[in-house]
Amino acid sequence: MVEATASGATCSVCGRRFEIRFRYQVREEEGRFLHFCSQTCHQRARVDDERADCSVCGRRFVLEGAYQIVTDDRGRWYFCSMACRAHLAQARGRAGWTGVRRVAVFNHKGGTGKTTTAINLAAGLAEAGRRVLLVDADAQGNVGASLGIRGERTLYHVLVTGTPAADAVVPVRPGLDVLTSNETLAAAELALASMPGRERVLRERLSERVHGYDVVVLDCAPALSLLNQNALVYADAVLVPVGCDYLSLVGVRQVLRTIGHVRRLLRHELSLLGVLPTFFDARNRIAHEALQTLRRHFGDRCLPPIRVNTRLREAPSARRTIFEHAPDSHGAEDYRRLVEHVLTHVASGTPDAVAPIASRHDEAVNGVPATA
Image (cartoon, rainbow, N blue to C red; front, side, top):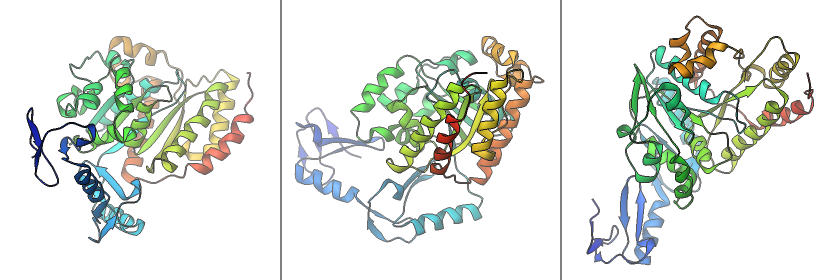
């Protein structure tokens, strides 16, 4: 363990005792602090960081991209080539290995039912026998308010102060734990901006410190933010709730561009789990037209709609999920159907191509009538 006291520290490279005077002499990595007595030792550490042993073939190689590293609840894996990465994925599949699946419920537009979807998806998965962690990544803290809970430690503490996630989660139902948030999460955005690898802090904080869960569901804020980038880089797949109206359809285009940005620029394999039509009112023509457009351009990635349902609106005020508040309602029926789809996806882990969908959707938006 690296030693550091008020009188000095021990260099992590050469072992020499020295006084810390400059910012570059201290670096946090995977929950521990490294110290460097000089620029030479700092550079030597950086060179070592750029090399790794392939987890498949054992060859020593130089890291050139984020795609060569995979961090999950079982550790960190390195790949010298895509062939080695594919080989390990096939071996996991033959062994029935699935690991933690992470689903981000995300849309830049507000009012599309993200929190309702995140809560009831997580609760439905827990009801189906899965061990689920629900992470509130929105400073409004609506997950805690909807379930009647308030954690003493929140996602802010996990991100900024390094609090282990296990010390911050709140057990709320059998099989369901929640990592809450509140207004302090807004301050985490400023802290993230100054951290190394700022888009991957959430992944570093949770990937190797969250154990025993089958699925992690993230309720994201309706914003273009650094915190949402962190959530998407941590997630395996994105579920996009879309209101059945013209403006919500327009907003999907930006979501798909963001997914493409994460895949191309941040080198993270992020798939589209599905587009979920919400607030579907069978009495309105615009709702039918929006649903038809989504089905035409997303195919089976357009999931069965969540119908307008009074019970769904009542459940948060009763501090219950829809399965507790009105288990026989249309809302419960619709969300059970969503849970079945997600369970199928978790079992198969089928990858998805985002770019072709984005180009087709650009055409789709222009073809949707603006009025009913």
